[in-house]
Length: 293
Ligand code: R5P
Image (cartoon, rainbow, N blue to C red; front, top):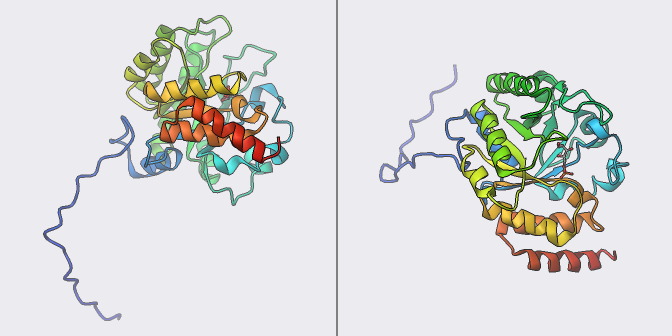
């Protein structure tokens, strides 16, 4: 029988134990595993994240910049806080030594040739755990033809996620005929949060974005959208975090930039350090020159 150890005496009775809160908005009542995963997606020091979205192929195939993820994305993917992608690309291209958090695409079905809102759940929670994902992403098409189906996809994933400690990212997908108004995004984000999503991805709108983040009780990450000039993308990211976003989830505005590594560094300065867009653009141009581009 092992000998009993001596009882410790260093209880530091005069050092108060701090009441523990959690740094992310609306997340304090979640369980430890879920918080730990969120704490890998969002940087606890700034409370924000730079997610690099490369999951476009799940409905669009090999778009410009993503033809060869191994050649064009992996060399700078470690500069993101989190990589958002499909399990297919994760298994086939991303080395298991990849050091950052991953968010896996868990809905899909229609290609870009069909009605996009007709999505189903496209991955089991068991596989997400096997792949050590930090969250699963699901499209929610409020107002579109298959609105109820996509919301049901989300609530089923939320239930499964609650069982295993897996956060769910609801992506407010805008159907082809929907207006991108603050009122629409307030509605869509709020529905996602009310029905249990742990964080929400939505688009920036120039007026009223702060009312969208204020009205959503969980963190919002700003979606990037189609490629725009670098200064505009940096300005949009700056305004989004100023107006309450907990970070960005950008794809084309990073990997379709002339210098993607420089761009993600500049976006990181904006998101985590609130660097002003003009300074971030100077940084981007300096880094681009150093890369010889
Ligand atoms: C959004 O619906 C999908 O997740 C996209 O594949 C991706 O997030 C879009 O990123 P971005 O619009 O910044 O290229």
